[in-house]
Amino acid sequence: MSEISWHSHKIDKVQRQELLKQQPRLLWFTGLSGSGKSTLAGALESILHQKGFATYLLDGDNVRHGLCNDLGFSERDRNENMRRVTEVSKLILDAGVIVLGAFVSPSRQQREWIRSQFSENEFIEIHVATPLDVCEQRDPKGLYKKARAGEIKDFTGIDAEYEEPIAAELTINTSKGDLGQQVHAILEYLLALDAASAA
Image (cartoon, rainbow, N blue to C red; front, side, top):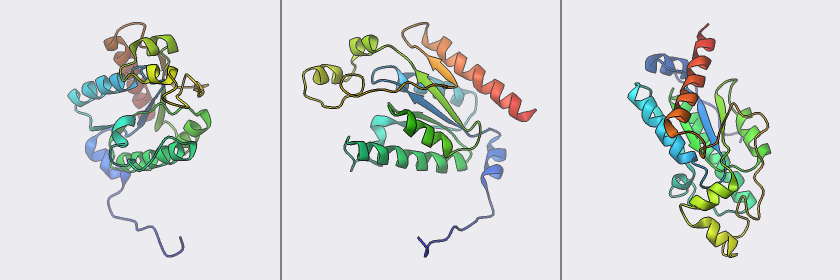
């Protein structure tokens, strides 16, 4: 829009992250419903908070209560949902804060587009690769049961495809190992990344 211009301010992203003494990143947890995305992201956020990091968790269900409460589940609406989440994540990263996003985000192309909106090493894709049968057994919201009964159409994993990441930075199957080990693996990756960035 030609009548809108970007206004540059005195305090920028670098100054904010220096104040917080941390490297802002977007940790993107993707996987089937019931795979453990929110549980894993929440456990990681708790540990990061205890260690003094500033974080914010964007949960797929929660953003639809406010930011995206006008959207349905058509392909167009899902794309708009992801666009809004991406823009909000940019703003939070600009504030110097670490963002954890827990979203099914079934489209590989869509996730790659999200990655393209961030600088190198700012977007960390974490594939929560819990098998469908385990997710369906858990079925914490009863969605698989409804999908199998035909009450929900185009449900990811049942009658809509989930495209697994080809080169996710981390892959975690929450049906194997325990939550503490899984969170530790992510922390180790982030610490190594920060050490490499500082070198």
